[in-house]
Image 1 (cartoon, rainbow, N blue to C red):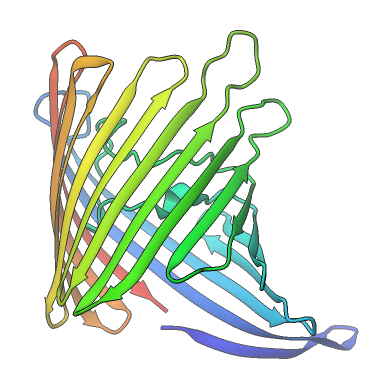
Image 2: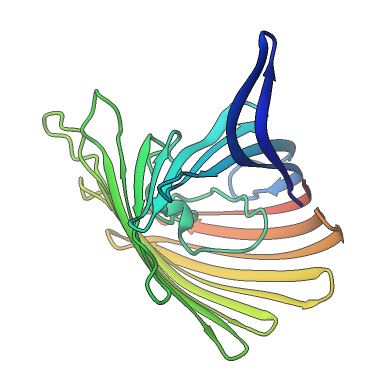
Length: 314
């Protein structure tokens, strides 16, 4: 649900000041989780329960200039800090986005749709690109017949040369009874510039998503390797979502992965989730995740997580 206001004047303590007319959009989200963990192969790992609550409030100001440019400023407020700050400048040339807290192209990568997948047992399990969470400049070319192209640059700061560059190419089209989307993302993080440093990395994500009637099937592959040649992860994901029951969606996915530089190292993960819409803007879901990792020495570690989620959007 969205609340849209028209801001045309502002009243301040010293008097009334005319302001630019701008559409103001306000969205709010609250997320409550009860999570239980079960790890029977490693007593030092998570084996208890956890209650987590997150809240997010997003403001978006949009205005069109006399020259035809569309300006959009966004800012978010979470339970701990401000986030999601950006400025969009859009026109016939495309769109330039200046981002204050680093949400880059890897956040757009196709992966799983299962709600609240919480396992972080292995570094490869959640891997879908390599954003730095740093100040970002992003440019989007004008869309052409369903084809979208984007590029970003993330600055790691004045004390390092380990910046990140990435590009995305995506094609989307409607087909009889549904839609299809294909995507490719390539991301590179440079070495820091310090003598002998090879801490940079390269990541690629590619995916194909097909929606037909009430089913959405997504197949994707994600790779990541470092310049010091210590890992070369690859995972493959198949995800299925069904929305044919009124008020209910069911999701399931399977992930398999390995490390090309360590023959014994591999990981698998499977998950299922059921989400029920209680009322417009209010959902509850139950998700179950099972993960298993075999490390380079052959040691097997497995864990399970079950999540109850209640989410409200305003």
